[in-house]
Length: 365
Image (cartoon, rainbow, N blue to C red; front, side, top):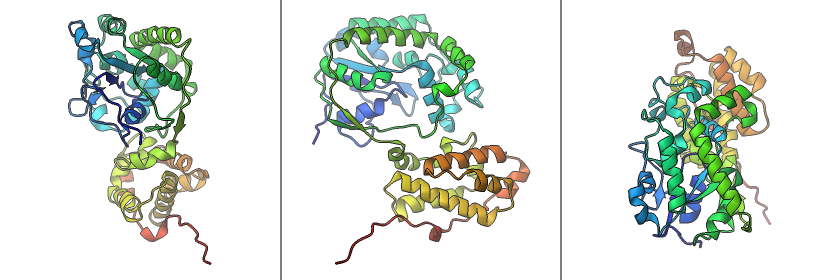
């Protein structure tokens, strides 16, 4: 068994949406990320504030000089896309932003979302109203120089792991499970040049830090040989973990209003898949979920524009893609008007006989 590696000499700083869950789990040989502590710097869920600020305090340098400290940075455009896609329907986070963004465009324009890589490192709360400035940037740069923080680059993930191993006592397993994959998000190529330029302008300090770290990384890794690491996992591997807490449609919906109109149906469906027939395969989970939902919609709301749109356009053979199509149909056809709420309120009825898990065929001799 791969032994737990969090030791006194290693401190991992996990900036959100930089691939840190995978590293944290690989270091701990754990199924999921561990609780933030001295050796694992991340967000405290209750306060929504990071626990990394003291590392970047010049008065604390002496405390950290004997530790191997490492972290990953991600290009601001890609990180913000991933962050918004992951968090857009989670009201406990989105309601921290005033006014609450209605879409990605309003999200990136809010000052509370800007330069969060630096904000996290210096201990600010998520969507803090105390904004990052150039002094904060210099604090981070100074700490990287003075206590020799190893900064990897998300876009060069495997090379970053080799870099961390080269300059510390870290040893990675030959196979690493990818622990968290955003199930539905646009790519950088999907957004306009105007939007990209706005992100770069609004996150100029984060971009400065990223370029600074990238230059150091490229210089330090010229002679570092990449270790052979096999990454295992795809989006379906994350489905079961995601749906333990969230509805699979939340990856696509722009509003949760439709889910609220039939909360009992969705709760019964998810409970049946997870706890009654105990589906263990993410692809099978989504396929059965889609089948049960479409069947319930046909039985109860067959004459609606939503049902017709789904029957016509949510037909992709890949279950997750089909689920995204279902979500897009709901976005097009359902608005939380009095008429629509009355039309769909508690109309969906879960029928467990519609879905059956895949079973293996046994040969009898």
